[in-house]
Amino acid sequence: MAHPMEFVSLPNKPVSTPIRSFAHPLFGVSISVSALRNHGRGISFRSIRPRNICSASGSDTLVSSSRGNGVLAKEEEDKVGDLKSWMHNNGLPPCKVVLKERPSHDDQLRPIHYVAASEDLQAGDVAFSVPNSLVVTLERVLGNETIAELLATHKLSELACLALYLMYEKKQGKKSFWYPYIRELDRQRGRGQLAVVSPLLWSEAELAYLTGSPTKAEVLERAEGIKREYNELDTVWFMAGSLFQQYPYDIPTEAFSFEIFKQAFVAVQSCVVHLQNVSLARRFALVPLGPPLLAYISNCKAMLTAVGGAVELIVDRPYKAGESIVVWCGPQPNSKLLLNYGFVDEDNSYDRIMVEAALNTEDPQYQDKRMVAQRNSKLSVQVFHVYAGKEKEAVTDMLPYLRLGYVSDPSEMQSVISSQGPVCPVSPCMERAVLDQLVDYFKKRLARYPTTLTEDEILLADCNLNPKKRVATQLVRLEKKMLNSCLQATVDLISQLPDISVSPCPAPYAPLLK
Picture 1: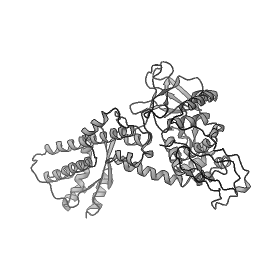
Picture 2: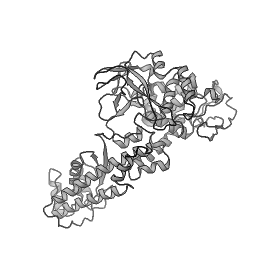
Picture 3: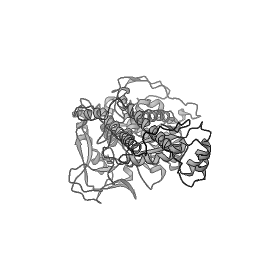
Picture 4: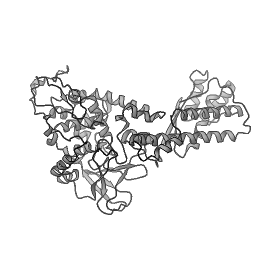
């Protein structure tokens, strides 16, 4: 996989001179950069004073490939100083953490850094406090809070704007103030502490590991969204005065290919922090001692918090000196953890799958049923969340909605309309029909996966399993466990019916399950 934020720097040439193609050091392909042009936006580039643009020579390349040159990279780090030293030199006050190394999943890649306690800590201790001068936010990138909010609200996500800024800064090489931080992000290659790179950068063959899971479609949808944002980059560049002034000739889509932007986007996505109780232009932040140097887990209360003119971390548990420090990843299901950070948490109490139910629009009584559903805080297309360990409760929650869809007699529908609650008249045959539909639905979802739970367990027992396949297998295994629990809960309800030999009622307009 290519470097998450690697790209070709442009040589110092007059704006009117076409620039030849250069071979990307890791991609091994040529990226053609044409002479920059106005794009019909009424701006005269010739009226702007040219600026020096970084050379593409090896000496100006930010980070060499991680494969086969760890010694050179180590020598550079010894010469320039590590991330924490740079931060102390630029205002980071004394703190209680150190940077340590752990081996990468891929032995061909350099070890990754992580934040560890430098001394014994107790719950409530401030591990570190990073001044705002060392935090990258949209307000800082775009130089104007109003513009930042306008762009983030109507044009691009905060992640896209932050990725664009770091790509520009990387082109400055060692001249950039953020050089040590960008070098650290390059070293991490978009991987967190428990993680592989996000599925957004997986090959088609690797995405096949997610076959049967709704997450695969989410990955493809997110990738399309990133492509749409890439196509809007030039608009941001022209609207943001700070970017235009700093990089007047570096039109984004001319300077960076989509693949490079996508890699940068994923790298930023893996480490951005969502701050609370701050302005919109500061809510998404890149904190140099934050993720991915901090490990995300679900059963934790510690968060990076904006306090005064800094972002600080107060630990929620005791640590021994040298132990890796963890923070809360928010109430995210494992599908989002894999998509955003490349890992799956086996003990995630927020893990869930979704069941989408919809009233049949061809039903002559659809409008009445829709009204009854809304009266009971449900929609005509209703998503039910099934949380790990609470599958039985989720199935029970679905039943009133499904029963409503099965009502066919007009007089019964009038009774439902006049009732005050979500209770529908339920005959034994209707209840059997509802439960049978659920059983069939859960069985079909399980059948979409190419492997069984037992086969997943055998795969995960293999210590040499490919890391990407491992996290994908962890995800689908947990999804199957929830689906199996839902199936079992439904079968149990059938066994509790007064007469399980009753045939299900015919349902010409049964609700739809997706």
